[in-house]
Image (cartoon, rainbow, N blue to C red; front, side):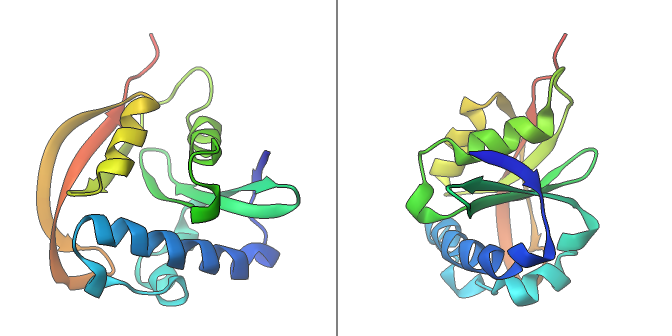
Length: 151
């Protein structure tokens, strides 16, 4: 598996991955009705304002991550590639060595994602509530997490 910069040729694959994995994420939080496909969500949530990387396995994109200097804003893995190290490879590519500090928010009820982030060194720092970014008609509660900064 390789992690590389996003290219425009990856767009249709990102849409497929997001739309399948986002439904899994929302199901865990009982928010299926909040689903918006990536074609719309990318604009609503400023996806391309972030640095975007993709994970590729056997010449196929299997996941992507978007971040800025402080936050991992998007991380989605093709459901057929769950538990194969794709998410970990993407997070490690962003955090780097020595580790930089990043925050992330995980929807309450998405225990799989919460456990994943904790397994790669993130620590829960609180709970927050508010409107869902990109789909503000939905109220959400999220776990806020930060990764432990290397010393």
